[in-house]
Image 1 (cartoon, rainbow, N blue to C red):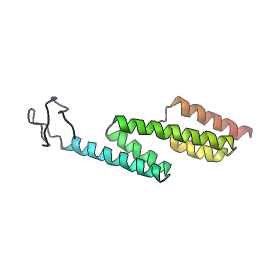
Image 2: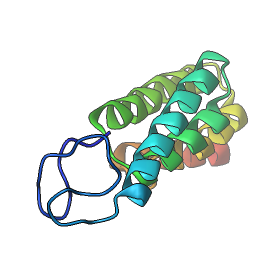
Image 3: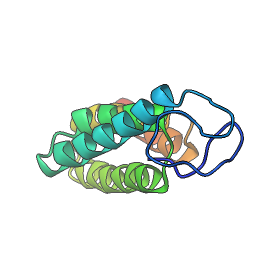
Image 4: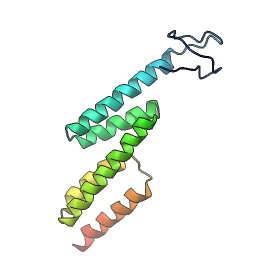
Length: 128
């Protein structure tokens, strides 16, 4: 739970209402708890090797609240999947690599690294 009110920066106790400005923090608290639950789901899906579900769950978590742990997990997931994609490409399994890359790009659609990897797989599809 938050330690400070997002409206007036007052210290918070366990109440869902700020003692200083009387802001209702119910939605904020619910959002933070939901973000933590989605992060937990993302980690569970990764341990079960369900990459697509893990990607969707971490994106939901980050939409609710960006925490350092959630951002680090997304970065780890991208790094891990890029290695797996490169392994598939080295084995000339281009279609499998392309499918996996599609799901990874959902994590960070504007990542230059992922855009370059996508362009490379497109090139291989045409030239192999």
